[in-house]
Length: 289
Image 1 (tube, rainbow, N blue to C red):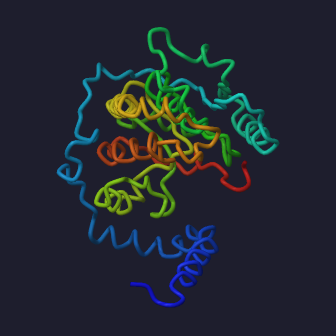
Image 2 (tube, rainbow, N blue to C red):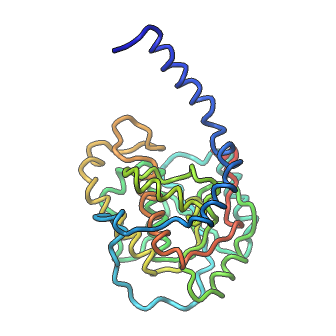
Image 3 (spheres, rainbow, N blue to C red):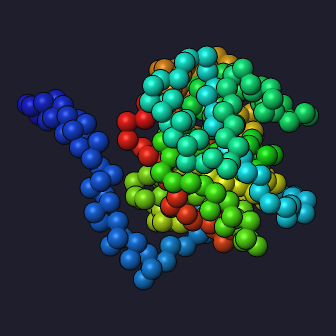
């Protein structure tokens, strides 16, 4: 049963949400210290039963981990045929300028074959992914098979060389990144219970725009396996409705966070003793498109 003015109220509510949306992370950030203090008093609990049937409970068999220094490489991906925007070019220049001692490898559609490892082809659904999701896929590929660093094409804020040195000096660090700054930056898990867990572990998760990884660890192995299993399931849908540049076409079947955050974030909590936190990996998120 409706009442007079219901549609007007719904429209006003939506308008208010749109007006608030650009500021929601800043507003949440004001209360974040209090929330994280409460987590110290009542630590969040990672219960495997909450992840029954998911990729989180799968333990991938992994050979002896490499002990050699992590490759001083930083992979950046531009996966479509569209040209770099001026802001993206400035971001690329910024990353190179901040990291003169690191091999910054800019992987494009034209140089992709040089990046791939013989015998490890792309998933058959790769060409049907949006350009953003192709980069997400290649991030997992790089972290598991190559090691080193990956980053979104956003301006750098610091040199990454000291973080590579911290990773080399650590005896148990598998993956480095910056802490998720605000609990609202979540993977948008399809299961509300799992989403709640991710919010409560926000300060222990890594932001998705930059990583440094030791290759071939249990974490990257589970990440890589889960990603490909998920694409196996979604293959037919993707073939029927391939993605565009940003994956925002109405028929495209994948959520923005579906093949990166929804896979890697829960695995980070599972393997959190092996995470290394360093805010120098934080990229500049202002005006980068």
